[in-house]
Length: 356
Ligand code: FA5
Image (cartoon, rainbow, N blue to C red; front, side):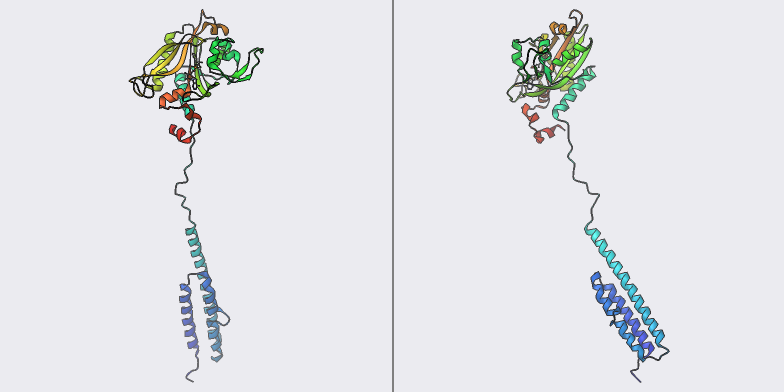
């Protein structure tokens, strides 16, 4: 019988089918395509099962061997399917990872760094200079008694000098022991508070906020900062005052700075002076910053008035002292050529960031 199927035929067909199945399997790139292949080769009416139908035509003794081979092929194909499935899954996972990749080596979004306010920066610089000369930094209250802000500074009630320092009164009851309570107009009351509690010698600088009932303009704020200075000892003289303030001006504005003392009046000093420095922008020739005078006014100062020493129980026959007071924003304006004091507290970040 020419068309009778032999065991060898079925084995050959099984081998060919297995190769074909493997080849097709390898070509799949998506896991979803695999179910069609499963139906084709391993399904109930798949190709392997159909081949097995030919087993019936084989001699009885050959059937088990060929049947076993067919089962082995089926098992191998099932294994190959599983392997391919896992490989595709791994591939897809890798793809996903790649697509969702996060490059942790890239620099992050820059963090905006804060900084000290220009007033604080210049204040620290000023205090540093005096600390290096042996002055101690102290502070006093911003809400102050009339007694410290005026009376003990040789400015009694109804003294015309009070007009220079109008302020905000918290409590206007002059019958109280210390007079009215007010927002201090200068840092000079700290002089009194320190001397009242400390025997001489005294050498202090007192930074802080002060308040004035004043219309604001390019050079005036109603709230601003001052630094007070005070030195009292047995032989303190005007020469010490000039030496200390000249050293201060040269440290802050440059070694070639010239310093000028003009007579001035403050009730708590005698003699009193106003200090100007040669304009560091034009070197004294005259420019916009110094309003073509060659000089910039920086502070008020003088020898502590004997009445102030007496008020704190220091003996003016034994002790003498000098004092000075400067406006911090005004110093910063001179140093950096800022032409309007209002920039300091407008909170415009473009201004503030220039002082990094
Ligand atoms: C006083 O306040 C005195 N206590 C200074 C003093 C101390 C003199 C010790 C003698 C001895 P005056 O009012 O001039 O003085 O102010 C001192 C400084 O504060 C001025 O030179 C100026 O730089 C600054 N200043 C005054 N008023 C304002 C204002 N409205 N805005 C900003 N700065 C001001």
